[in-house]
Length: 113
Length: 117
Image (cartoon, rainbow over all chains, first blue to last red; front, top):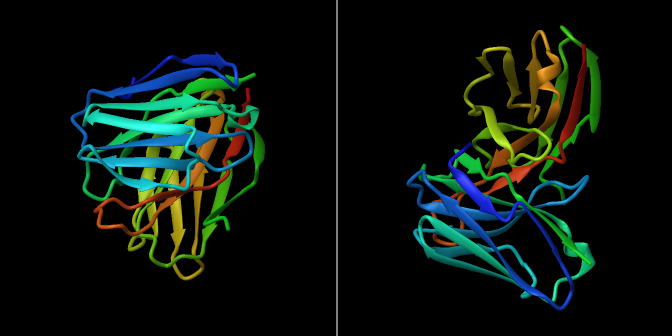
């Protein structure tokens, strides 16, 4: 275990559903990230939070809504998703000031039907 | 535009062989180059990393070779084992932006390595 825990591990949702992904890190890190991993594509950075403040939104559609209540927890709220949003969603955290050392969770495998 | 180009997409070697995975970049502002290893059902895990002022770094059976002038870097796995079968990602860290101290990691597309016993 890397110290970054994601739940649920698998999620199947309809296009009209609302669901949330949860990430918790036990490493005392200040920065947390959401990445999207699709087959045959590079990892795509979605959001970055540093000391609970969102510092980056990488042009992500508004149907994805992040929330960072504290430095240890990160959520990704999902609503009215499309089938092309099916992917592995990875949470990561880092401590070092430049974010060099990123630790990833195991991911949530999301399927939109 | 893909910031980090990785090849090959897949690689098959016999046990004991030395697979080599190559990456190239264009942005000279990148200043940290990690490699991640990902097993099925797991998230990527940091394997080894190098800074551009070093030409080679070795950790156990894993070696990064870095060519700053060519803007290329590669991962070599010595005496490869079936347990090394995984997907490997190279990455490059870009400079901070937007008032943050955090740089952004740009990843290659990944190389699926299979090591036959």
